[in-house]
Length: 160
Image 1 (cartoon, one colour):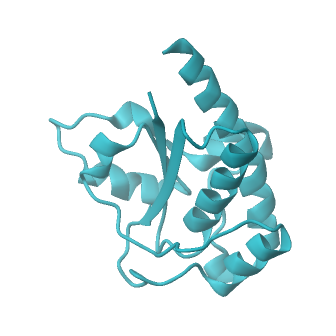
Image 2 (image 1 turned 45 degrees about the vertical axis):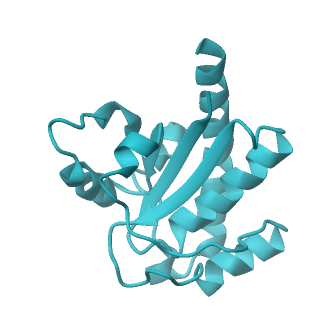
């Protein structure tokens, strides 16, 4: 059964599309593209329909990772039924995504923050490079966190 991952940040132009592209790349290298699907969304609607931020594109270009066709979109309540993992790039977005859940939907167990994948980093949130411009640091976090998430997904797939 196919596993589906959704990364969520505020505007869906910096952190979550970077994570989407990096995770897709890692999934492709692991030859699991038929078993794992990856997407991203934002909690704010300012950038809907826009491509990833120039700083995100620059990092992805530097590492030869495709972001072709990616456009910002809003996270929807229907995403809770559609995705197995909903990975929020920070605690504020986790709170906002939780507020979209109704009691009937449940699904809180599939929600977690990206930095839960990297507990040794000692930070709770992936910093937003839209404000500080540090796309290189964010890329390093995203690359390492996606490796950990891929291990988790592969382990879950072997259990099902």
